[in-house]
Figure (cartoon, chains in turn purple, green):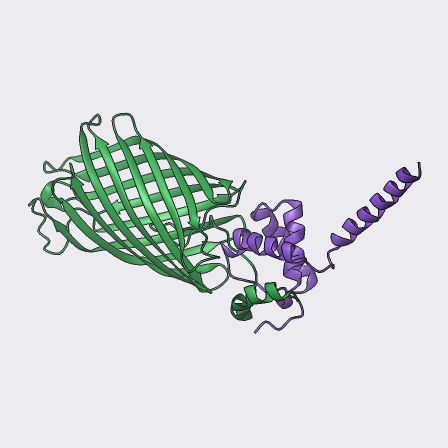
Length: 95
Length: 274
């Protein structure tokens, strides 16, 4: 029984960890960054130049992300990863 | 910011200074005679209407006031992010005045085509993008197989594409064969987030039965394109600037071939996203 409770506790901790990792504000891991770059090249850069989120209000950026996400048929996990990736360019020097 | 991400995107950041609003998709074309190497996103679908007017041949071969309308309806689908499949319905309307001053006109269905475009090298990841293209057409007593090598790249607001094509046509109940060699070049610049203006060059050579060259013609002209969120359009006007008729039929023009080709080729394309 004790082992079972310990297992449940461990599962809860891991689940919490995962929830934290999916937090949009959480930094990307190296693996996630690589995946996001690949996704960016396939779904975005293939068709248009880079648009820096820094040049848009958060509202406008969200609107464009939703529009372009639909156009490029992004699946929800792809959309989430790409959003987090592109947000890393906000508030950074762009030139 | 993540160092890897910063290193990767820094060149793009330089281009971002003039960014106004995101737009653009692989389906939106800047050229009408030159394909661009990008393929559609997986799951994306688009309808395209092609209208090509080929006008003005020489009166000396009995084709005065020559007009030919080529109509194509295309349904395009992104099978994967690197493979686009499209189905075409082809039709042709031709009219002219013959040697007897009779008006001749004909409308015919020219069969279906199946476009297969595979992106081998993504232009976003390499110096040049590369796609291979294969399009079989079947029209009952006629058939065609067209292959293309498509390269191109975008530099900020500029984009270029080059196509090298070969097609084999089988006509007269598949008894006659003709080879066609075509090269196209397109260069365009975005003037705003909606408008782009450019130039297209097209060279076409026909070799009946792959024996002797029958004709070569070069066309050069402007292309203008416009895009909205759900649709886009592109128009090219290509006057023939040089042509040679190798089989000796007289057309009275030393520098143009108006026997096998027209003085003007004009193509309008409209695309609608689903």
